[in-house]
Image 1 (cartoon, helix red, strand yellow):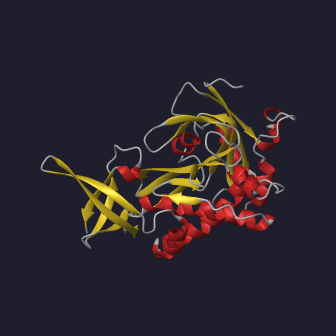
Image 2 (cartoon, rainbow, N blue to C red):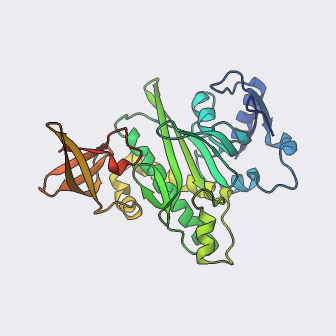
Image 3 (cartoon, rainbow, N blue to C red):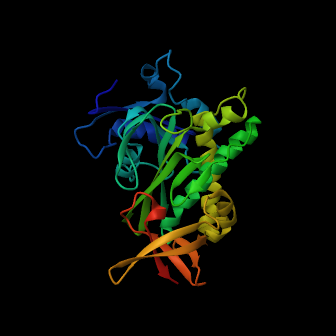
Length: 331
């Protein structure tokens, strides 16, 4: 096992264009981590045989993934590591070095990041990846996480359809979690920086495909429905994800999130959900019940109160459970 101060990165591309980029990046040895003490070793796919043990089938299959990619931009340039601190760090700290749409995948991630700066180790069996995209309109950047969430759920459905498997009904919990049978199986993290009149967005996704701890995973749900089923693998889900995401992202950029809203609302957990909003009125805590209707144009929750007033619901930033810490604003 590699020490935390060293890391092996394998670069590969879909076409000769991306392969040339991989060669150039290796020759320059310019990929960096936030921690300057991390020693980075870079390999091309053809040089990486020594990183994969013959008796371990838990490694990400680069060829299987690349053969599944049919996109024009996203996922065509891949960085893989058997063990990595954070895929998000690789993408965000090397944004200008990598082609837009590049993806970083790891088998074990020991400094994964969450929305409240939580850090954890992700075991084998999880699909953990980060990729890059660019946007010009900062008003719609917060909505990207919803496009990503939808692409994940639709990718799982697509793979099940193609393999003739029962449909695994992954649901979206606002704003950025994925649930199966009431248990969390994944999450999304989006960060951005503004440079040269563009937002550089790094998108991180974690999806538990084949590890039943600590909650559940996609294959556990599949086996419950059909014990004899072929299991899902990370490579085909990631390939299907980029196929769906590229279509959804083009729609989103061309027509706005309205073009995806109907599908999103069919997939999330919150239509007509009643939540209690606590507010301070003259040093007293007052509880108000509201019913969620959808999303506002800025990406927050749209709700109607028992007084028929429309409200925009924001997380207060302190509560671990969004739905116990919502702040309402009249609209």
